[in-house]
Length: 303
Ligand code: PRT
Ligand code: ZN
Image 1 (tube, helix red, strand yellow):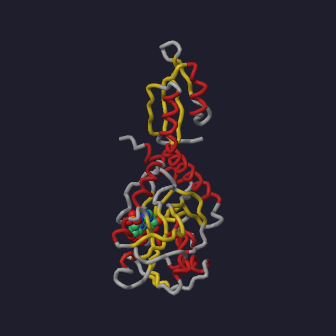
Image 2 (image 1 turned 90 degrees about the vertical axis):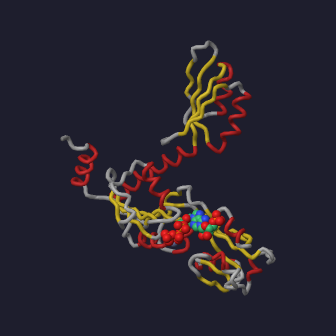
Image 3 (image 1 turned 135 degrees about the horizontal axis):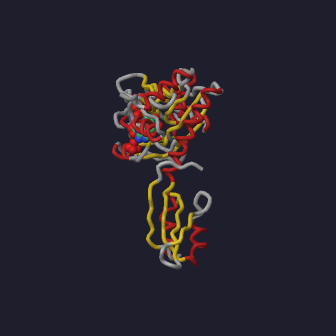
């Protein structure tokens, strides 16, 4: 029976080089699923999902995954146990390890904010003077208070921070906010946004050059996936005398593709359009005579 070609290539690869990078990801939690989905979109496949294991090797890319609690990822990368890590920027800031952010991934977005019980007045950081603030992020909060010359008591707790004022454990909290509904349901209001965060890729300064090549290959794929998510492919029909105006609206990656239709005087125009500008531009395209507009998701996009 012939061998699965992927298996053969895989074995040859490892026999020749043996070099692979270790990527630390969250084992379970808010970033875990999206981290694995991103790798899958980058064409990195795993023989087992590794959920029950600490390590999983990729079947078709020189990479192994190390599944950890997110709080341990910066340390693991700083100590070079993992070559790169995928973690929330908030955790990088809190753990204060010597790592560099080499890529922003655009998911896991949230903010770290101060929140107070709804009735409590707040005009600025000075109002926190002498207050007891509950948080799982004492370092980031401490730096914020120091910057504003405020002396407050930081009460460190792990989890369920939002209930602290309600049970008399603290007068304020400093925690992650995403939609704001947790604050609202606990009678709290966000008064100060201290930092924003998203999932990032981190590395220790000065990685081994051979490993850097593999890291660059992975980042290249991540950028192509991310960029594709920010754009759509657009096809439309337009009268020939409107092509110049429509091209100005849809410059695309270099310039749009224009192909004649069987119907004289009309062309089909293909381009890419930024997702965030999409509705605004569609209106303008219609005003310039575009018809039969089709918009299609892009899987990968490489400049
Ligand atoms: O077990 P492990 O230590 O690995 O995970 P964890 O429990 O420490 O972290 P986890 O899985 O909850 O979150 C991982 C990362 O996701 C965080 O470090 C952030 O970078 C990011 N992230 C994005 C969030 C949120 N959004 C978020 N909403 N992390 C936590 N929350 C929590 C927040 O703590 C609060 O309780 O959700 C609540 C607020 O949400 P809203 O939508 O009600 O405002
Ligand atoms: Zn954690």
